[in-house]
Amino acid sequence: MIKRLLLIAVISFLVGEIVVYGVRLSQGRISFPSREAKQQGDKLADVMQLINENYVTDVSVGYDELTEAALEGIVRSLDPHSDYLSQQKYEQLITQTDQKFGGIGIQIEMKEDALVVVAPISNTPGERAGLMRGDEIVRINTHWVKDLSMDECLGMMRGKRRTKVDLEIFRPRTGETFQKTIIREIIKVDSVRGIKMVTDRVGYIWIALFGERTGKEFLKALEILEEEGMTSLVLDLRNNPGGLLDAAVEVAQPFFDRGELVVYTQGRMPESRLEIKAKTKGARRSYPIAVLINSGSASASEIVAGALKDTQRAVIVGETSFGKGSVQRIFPLSGDEALRLTTSLYYTPGGELIHGNGVEPHILMALSAEEDQNVLLQRSRLEVMSIGEFAEEFGFDPIEDSQLKAAIDALEGVSVFEEARLIKPVDELTVR
Image (cartoon, rainbow, N blue to C red; front, side, top):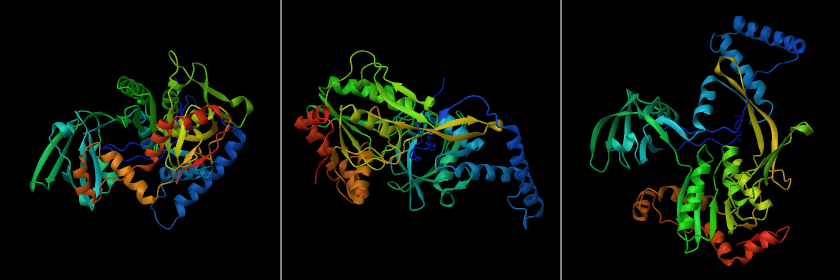
């Protein structure tokens, strides 16, 4: 089955770098016009041979290296999102969009050349090994962390299931240093987080990225909050770089009637239009929704926000989104490599082009760079530490999230939601 995905930015958060590229997987080989392809291919081969035989040094002039560099240059000249995928990149793409990877299950950050454990993930090898928040990983196998980059550390701790990694740990709170041998397992990453009631009636859900299990996680979160008395919802998509298009549709469709258009894509040819419709089971949910977005909300996030805005099912709060609305398709090549190529753009149900434009909020609420960073930090860290611990570690007390407050006020006021749902077009409201 063809999987629809959308380009998103790199997320490097959990051990085992999560890198999700937006793509549609396509099986089969490409046929090129033989005569033209042969002529240009011969020209490229001649240049490669001249470089290989005559360049001043023998560094990076092997045919494998020259071929890869040529392919990368050709594809990247088209647009920023098309790319030639080496075997390693292609394997990352295939294995990591399903929200799982081989690793030990800890959240980490690099702080002053120290690899610090933010928190172990529940029921993972890292937690069972006794790793604690604040522990510093000094050595990975035979390599000292001070000599490694973050990416290199991530790569060394990731690996196949049932393989081992040796760690040397320094625990600042006790001053002890000790060794741990940890057996890797498949680590599943939750993309739906922060599930809670923020008032007696308003529920809150934060989606960090759109992965293979996001749709199911989101439905479960809705059911939990509905059982707690939720009558309206804040859906937080801030700094969500996107992910799987299928997951975006699954998140939006509980609020759509079955068969209703959620998004469509359009390529170069008129017949390339592809409509993606809701497959809702039962009646759609009709309670008020506020969607939080900012300039870090991209791709799949924009599909959800755009669809709910276009159909007047949600008030959009925050800042204009990133504006990434192109669809990349993956063409497998020989040698376990692939071509990622932009083939179409996607549009909201009402025909609005998101690429280069973004989704504009009904309620414009901009944060300063410092406020944005603080809100982002406390949103993730207050899940794993107390307010006191947070203030001690980061040097400031949690600040009020004014964008969230504006969303809650809009929902509790109801009138703003009704205007967004019933009046077309909705005038932009600016909150200062």
